[in-house]
Image (cartoon, rainbow over all chains, first blue to last red; front, side, top):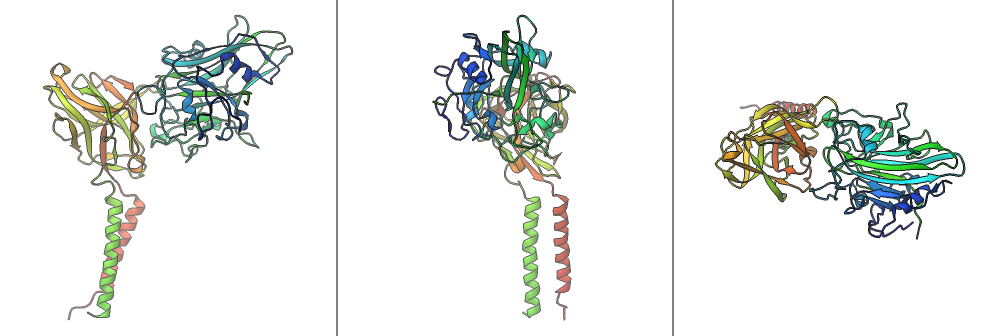
Length: 295
Length: 231
């Protein structure tokens, strides 16, 4: 068992440090890129979210919590308090303000501009958690991130305006950022609540790209996902009611992969971002594979 | 008493017990106690209900395939402010604010206005239905309003921030509510839950009805077969 930072939870085995004494944005970036042959430019990393909440963190023992082995250790960004990830899935709707068991939201009323461009006009967005850093490689190589999007919005808030989403953007110089966090379907759909789901028959919302969706058993009676995708008990020992996944033809399930080719000796700007849509209440997270060091 | 008579009476007794049990199973579910309730949770505040302050709390019915008949609704209220009048509590269907996302759930059509007195005093107030049919696994709205405007005061409906638990067949409150100044244009929020209890009767499943019929048939056949001719 790899103990990372303070061991807070025993049930979920997900670990998340406080912002006060946890890893810096630079450390998170370096852990994400460790072993890739790609360097993080010194002092280039930054993280933005309200400092009152712990919207970022690192974790260990993800495999013991049921996550794909690639995500055994990683970095977590949340639209609320990432500590919620430590909880078993006993609540149908955790996050935001005011409600029982709720974390605090990130208290940022404007979403991330690149994510907003994906979700389109007419939707208010909140609580972005954004990790940025610059990378360089001495060889032309493939930049690759293994990640999972998970949300408390599943399944009862599908098909409405609560389309929480994430993205991994990369660009050089002043070029337009390109989102490489896309589903491996023909449409290369974005990754978010209303782009991948098992549907919700309580409100007649059909499944969308369900082959990339893993239900995690919303404990409320509203958990009337389409039967083909609903599970009777949580698959992952975290609070979120649904998540993304890839099911290979053989072997265990694996996380989504975001990847692109980067040129030699070129500085790229990377942005990993997640935000709430519709309101700030229910939380979503992105888990990214990282070589979080064991103590 | 002859052996035949004793046998007949014993069979009649056993069948009667089975019939009563079946009747209780099919028709007695949820009668006399709430099918869902969050009335016992600690209120986090209350909201004025008036002709210019409509509140709609949605809820999901349970999993019983044949649906439910609504008996009554209870609301947890605080003492009214001012001199409001004409409180009404209605059951609405649910709909969406737009055909496609981004959209939100909101009250649709008024299905029934329930019977009950003005909830003027703090406490739990009951409102009766004529037996409105509710489909299973469907979102409906409780919509409260009054005939007087907020300028004269209003009725106060409690809400809670605590997480309600499921009721009969996983019946539950929706994790959000709608509000309106005119009952036509609705806004939506997920900040808290308006407190209510719902009492329904599960409509018997066709298979249970068939079992009920078989039991009744068996009772009749048994009585004929073991009947002792009068002398």
